[in-house]
Image 1 (tube, rainbow, N blue to C red):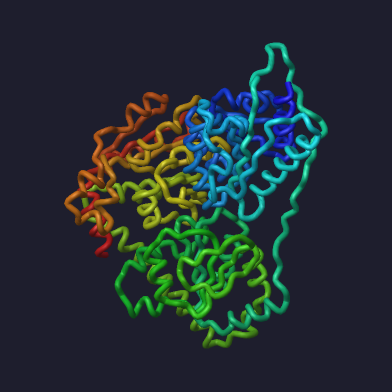
Image 2 (cartoon, rainbow, N blue to C red; image 1 turned 90 degrees about the vertical axis):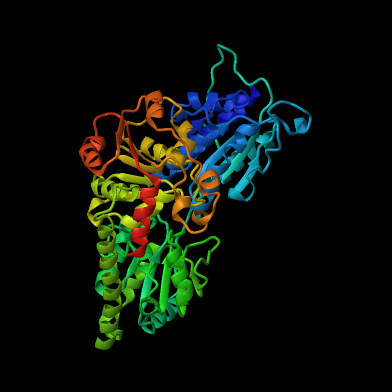
Length: 572
């Protein structure tokens, strides 16, 4: 069967290049891909019927494993359902290999079933899109397939990592005969990609040190990043020994550094212009992707630092603060390690400069402590709210676990609360495109590839939107889902704009009366519910206990009381 012979070659290359995790959505046109993957001894395959959910599950797996994860689907609209997760993977720089089965090109626009134009269907939301030949008889076709699959996998893993698409036209017959044996070729072409670290020249380091010395107030701001213990160690040294404040919201995964400024959003929420001027840096050093806080973005735009370095080894560089002066093309770990090693602190800083550095560092620390006190006082003599529920849950998270937080209000609450440095929590959120559509799937995918406890905090609308991510037979026992149910899109009551409109309740909040109980029952997940803080405190220990099953906790709150507590917090 010529089709299978070529597909098995493709699958064997994936196996040899360690792309061994695949999520498959059932279909007929994709049968040769499915069968080859299912029968390969080194492949780990999972079946998820809903393609949109399947793609978010793959995203979660790749986020945690940091390896390329594969997707397979049939032709037609099945392909389009991958779109939201692929866009998220592109902007969050997550490696995916997308294999979409297709009809041969001559059948396009011929009113054939399950057919649409799949060539480059994901547009600019993939690093590259390839198409294999529909006919495999010529030796050049074999060469082309092998070269293309190698190139696609290598590209998914090179910086910045991201999704890569291969469209696979397949002719009938799709299925092997009942007694037909499938074998995988021993000899396939493997092309390796050697990634190197960009190293700055001695002359460039001289200029960096000169600018450093000439900048009394230095500020490091981290955007969304994966958990990196070595980077945490170096930044901790820089912060403590050089007295340089490091701002890292919950996306940064820097919360293990005890003196990280976690609550910059709350600090900069204040309309204290003299304070903002004192906090403004002369030298701003940034790395990572997006930050959550609009307050931080506005502050840095207004502060307009004299110099702004962004550290990034390659790729397009964003300028969200409108202050960029220099891009430094190297890995943040290499840059900060070299910077710390090269700076002989006492050799170029006199006592006055040391004192200035310390004063600036202490000012940020004082504001952090005051913000934390304001947060705690918000819940004093206040009604039970989803904000306080998040505060309680995050303080109770088991050490060395994973936390996923969905978009809309949950990520805002979590960012204002922050993670304690002793908890060793690895944090994830779909903040590449910030949609609510696949948050459950992303968390569940991460739970598939780790034995650690994985907790998801999610709002009711996002949970209802993504219930199909539970529609399969592999709910991992280490998954904990916490649904904040205010029976509508509560964020629209809490943000400026929609909250003042007469259409608020009917057109923005979109009230719903459902709970998560029936969903939990449908998928065999033990269900907990609470309405008060006392009930939550009684439940939380059992809920987080690792006893061999996934669990779902629903916290029901009144959206108007949530609004009252939120306004109290914003007023300080």
